[in-house]
Amino acid sequence: MPDARLAPIFKDLVVAIKQLVEKHQITPEEYRAAVGFLSEAGEAGEIPLLFDVFLEALVVDVNSRRSRGTPVNVLGPYYLEGAPFIERGRLVSEDERGDRLVVTGIVRDVEGDPISGALLDFWQADAQGRYSGFDPGPAEMNLRGRLRSQRDGSYQLHTVRPSAYTIPHDGPTGRILLALGQHPWRPAHIHLKASHEGYKPIITQVYLADSEYLDSDAANAVRDDLIRPVTPTGSGYSIDFDVLLEPEPTPAG
Ligand code: BEZ
Ligand code: FE
Image 1 (cartoon, rainbow, N blue to C red):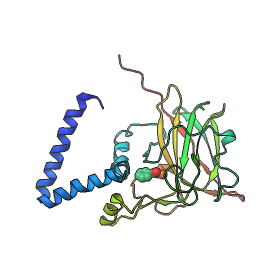
Image 2 (image 1 turned 180 degrees about the vertical axis):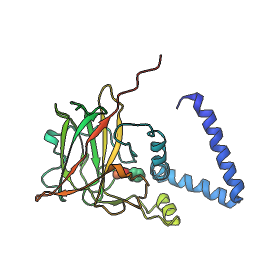
Image 3 (image 1 turned 180 degrees about the horizontal axis):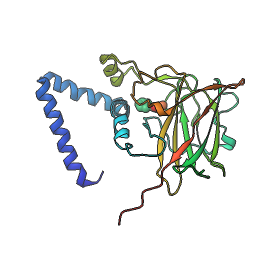
């Protein structure tokens, strides 16, 4: 964050919290409980989770209101840099458990012209709702992979259906969700970063239309225009998800 924005934003943050203290007549015990809660979240490594669950969707919305490309969506806490490049779109190994799913689409610019060589970086939970690198079980970098769109802008991703999953709910974030009457489930989705020189990179997710919890996502991040039908193919399922990239704004001056 540029220093010029840090001071005014931090001041407003403190003003907003002071208003909240006044409005709710926060007691010293409640104040200390709040400080203890944040410390506990930090010790549990849950600060990214806590903030992503309660705030990231709003930050994304605020920054994408004028976008003409594919709607952006939350990154979440489970992205890992350096996913392997995959051959022929094969994200799964033969022995991966779960229903087979093929995601196909065309990467285009906002005029509708295909973009070849766009970098697509996918990550998803497995059929048991587990993320490699975070949950016990999956091998390193499992169900994480990068590929480039073909000359005609098309791509194919051969994978398994991700399952809906619970975000960790045995720690501080889960306790807050429970206190709010909110379950900890996220609906089934696949994450995607898409980029190409000359275009604005995007981070988004595609949501499976037949998943549970689309209407009650714990991260409040589902957007209707990111939900896609899941079509049975006989051997599995398919989803069509085109990706639209906006040109990079030219620097002013
Ligand atoms: C996710 O989709 O991976 C995610 C997003 C926000 C909070 C927790 C998880
Ligand atoms: Fe996710």
